Image (cartoon, rainbow, N blue to C red):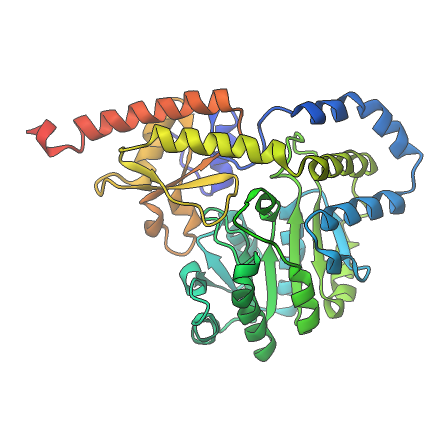
Length: 394
């Protein structure tokens, strides 16, 4: 097997496989109502040709934020659009480099955030996710551990699903914001998985942008469409920044982006309206189905799907066999034609901490997913019986 330097290189290889559960992009089929949108593509194309860019942008932005009840995000003209969330992250890295600012980055998290910042030579230090788990200790934990100029969170976190969104976590989020205000830190948040919280009946959302705006802190918030709907990566990401950062951030933005595709704006707005109409049912149903398949497949096995802290589109699974490492299990599964991600890369500062985890993407057609999980189950049983069971060996 080839040696890869980051998770994205793994995901590129995984795209060649029938049983690809590596990348968190959406690979499931269209729902019935989404198929109706596909039938209208020529109409949407011609409509885009005749409509002003500003009109399409406004319609898309308004629908995107309103669907999650984020009315405050629509205040001020400070949202910038991108072809992908990674480009928004590069934009942020440009600003940090220009200002010579350092960053405390969440760990674990998807490693392309680390990779982008590292390649831009931004000084980085890890911010352990568990420092944010106790509401009463968050402020002191940040005060003790954060010495950088900015804090970079992922919410919900990829891979664990940890979130400060939802009304029951509002106090915790306010503690983070208060720390940033008291110590003049920039708060950067990757909200690329936040749309999945619309699927989670245990989480009641609130307007996080209202908290950010009223606090007066400097912030940058990335949003995305590419992980939620089966749109063949015809996606758009957004970056909303606080008013006092916008002018300088906009000057960097226009150095390399004129506009995003008017057709994609028009096309995605239809998906937003459809999601609102069906209350995200098409996304929720497929993820719930695959979560059940996952749980049933690995029952009483050496691989345990951890209870998600929020119902995002990935499963974070713990290897219960102490002698089996994630890198080895990932390699064995790859040789069997199944691709998952080892946990090592998510722990970008200390990869060894990830050797007990693998991540499995859930946004797949259930039939394909069930076949893939059955293959993994067979491998786990073989490993448990023949390689790691002392009785079998003796």
